[in-house]
Each structure stands twice: as structure tokens, then as C-alpha cells.
Length: 331
Image (cartoon, rainbow, N blue to C red):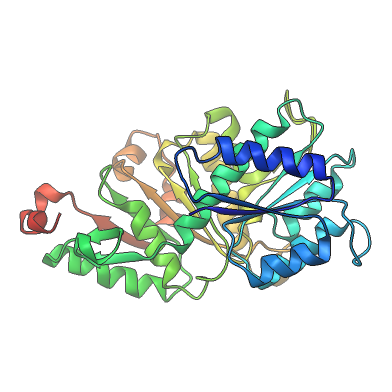
């Protein structure tokens, strides 16, 4: 069951958050546990030595690290457990600490001074736990009984899919997974990550349909303070958060033309030789997926052809079940 560690030396705040999360975050899950620690050193030790789904830490804590202790926890814990989501809470008006936290490997930061602080924290925890479970839940192959989440099918076309996963997982190439809704594109992406050399590094997923069009570019690439209405702080994008690991862009075919252009520019940048980089490169592996017919979208000027070829270095096509009836008994 989901298990959360809160490192907070304000006992009133810690107790309040514990009660709220246990009551609201995962309603109906009996064994959901929230553990509290009020000291930086003890919190880091527990997070390293025990199993948690997410760690929440305050920026300023009692400890021997020096100030701010929360950044040291993030730095050391991320180095020890790169996939473990770490959420920073801060009331500090200097948002540079929050930005630094993301650069050091934090999954998210939440400002205590925000009007909806507790709601924002709940949202971050829920997403973090879901993300961590996606990374740690093994993807099975062949039969539905082989794993709780499995890519089902033993037909010839599915055998080819398994071969493609094995071939592309061993290389750092960008992969485009295509198939109708419900064919298992997200499971293929997870299998590629789990069988790659980056399996112990961050795995960030973005559903390009679920995020409003006006916010998707900011979510992916970040934004500067004041870049648009409501941008009260500078934000690091998901690409930079996935540094060292893998990012999965689901429903890539639904991106606007402006976001497509930004993504193309980013893809070109990460493939430049180091000597040509104007700034430190972000080391990530991109896996994209779509249910749309991208060649048709290109002909209709709805998708950039140059971006398609950047993403389609390795291609995996998932056929629908109606095209492989021999797999129906396995479902």
C-alpha cells in the first residue's frame, strides 16, 4: 500500500498533513501509511533504508547539514534512489531554492504560502505515488496472468512487438509507439524503460491530451516568472526533471503546432555534440506515443514532418485485438 514519509520539524504542520493525507489522498485504501520524522538526519536515514512511495520534506529543518537542509536531503536521496519521488515544501519567498530543488532531483515543490497549499500538496503526492508505481510495477509479456499489467498476446505480430522492445530497449534511440487507444502503448513505453540501461533513473510521463493546450508548453519546457498571467514563480519543465532518465510523451499527435516547434528544437539540441552545446545538455531518452495516423496528419499540415522523423527513429506498431484474433483467448 502507498507509504509516505514526511520530514517536517513543525509538529503542528506535520500532524495536520498526516491527518489530511490519510483522510483524503487514497480513500478506501486501508493500509495507507504516513510516517513522520522531525529531523533532517533521521529523515534521510529512514528514506534511504526503508521503502516509501514518496518523501515530502520541508526546506528548513533541524539537522547537521547546514541550511537549507531540505536541499541536502534531496541531493543525497536522489543520488541513492533516483526514481523515488521527493516533494519539497517551502515557505521561503526566494523561489530559487525551489528551482534548485528540481535541478537536484525533486519531483515537485509546493509553496506553503499559496492559498491552496494543502490541495496542491495532495495533488503532487497523488501524482508522485502513481508515477512511482508505474516505474516499479513490472510489465509482463504474453498472457494476462503473467503480471498485473501485461502486454497480452502470443501471435506472430505480437512476437515482433516483443522483439522490437528488446532491440530498442538496448539502445538510446528515440522510439515512436503507434496504435489505437487501448492497445497498450503506455505498457510498451514502460517495458522499454525497464529493460534499458536507464531503468534505475527517473521516468517521467506526460499525457499531452490531459494537460490544457495553454499549459502544455510550460509543463514540458518550464517558464520564467511573469511569462504569462499566473506565472508567479519560475518553473523547471518536465524535460529537465527527467535528466538522466526517460520521458514518455503520450498522445504526441495532439500537440499544437507551436509546441511541436519547441519540441523539435529541443530534440535537435539534445542530439548536438557536447562541444556545440551553448548550455549543459539535458541527458534524456524520449519515447513518444500516439493513436493518430501521423503520416496522414503530415499531409494535412497538422503535424510537422521534420518532428515526425526525429521521433520515429525506432518505430513500434501495436495492432488492435481484432487484427490478431488468435490472442483473444489470452485476454
